[in-house]
Image (tube, rainbow, N blue to C red; front, side, top):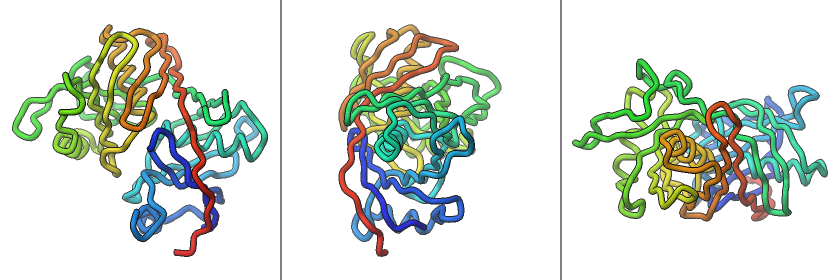
Length: 273
């Protein structure tokens, strides 16, 4: 495994970014050791950059959660990867191969990246989610109460609950309970959305394999997609997260969804642990 890395973050959702070959991919125990915030580097996800699989892409990447499990997509992490490659290769337009599919990205300012997050997929099988048919609202018994939520795949699985006050939402209780619900065999990210108006919402996200983070890019996309298909949001929405704001643009069903936000380099380092 390559021992040089870059520490980056998008709205406080932080990453260890490093490049290598498929033979250098970290083991789950190695990821957990590096993710420890007292004895390691500390991060929400490790973004591992790989050589491009073909001429249609500039690079590929894999995503490892702090607990060593692998994720299919990470919006904030994808922006950081795009900035890292943009600076390495001197390119402002990129196509990246990810576990969740091809990601188009463009650098619009030194610290700002916009990425095409693809078409939201509301089919339960896409998450996967044990539900016989697609619905706008699903219900499950959690922590002694009946909970309603929407579900969508943004290259990784998301369940989104609508709340009246995001600050008071029981993220630490319902987040882990829904993440590990048996009807989500690969677990699920859980968002808590408070809609302010048709162009703005507030969001907290419990990420699978990590816990609550200061920002979740795919979670912001999922919240907007679910609010939009319910007729509660317009095509351009600002999402307020604890770490800052993301701008989401989605014309609607069948269209690609774009997310814009910061991607910050913090420091360069060399591993010795």
